[in-house]
Image 1 (cartoon, rainbow, N blue to C red):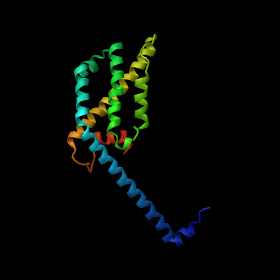
Image 2: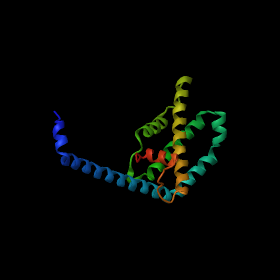
Image 3: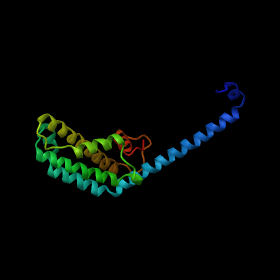
Length: 174
């Protein structure tokens, strides 16, 4: 049982614990900033690869017409499914110290890559196509954000913009 009287009469013992915790929080913050800086440097060093992949996506698939017309066919879905793996691989290459993706994002990628598109039932095929598209749009979003902030930032921002914060969350750095 906690003795509240001893806490009040022995403040030095309590203050010592606070200082220790403060130091570990400072170390964590420094470590996190170091990883964020490494991420930014990795993006800058792979910027040409990121842009080339984005360019090839835009050449092969007209995003605007596909998004707004909602065209779906097996060939488009298979192509999008293949691109998920390529983009995810490049996003892993820019990861600081091989940090894993956020668990939710990894699940979205896995669901998109593993979705069966040769289903007999329209309902099942539609559900699987939704997984592919969800995954595809997520990875292309992070590809675009990595390019944007790789070009825009020279150093870590004090007040990070939303897109940069999203990228940090992808690698569990924020």
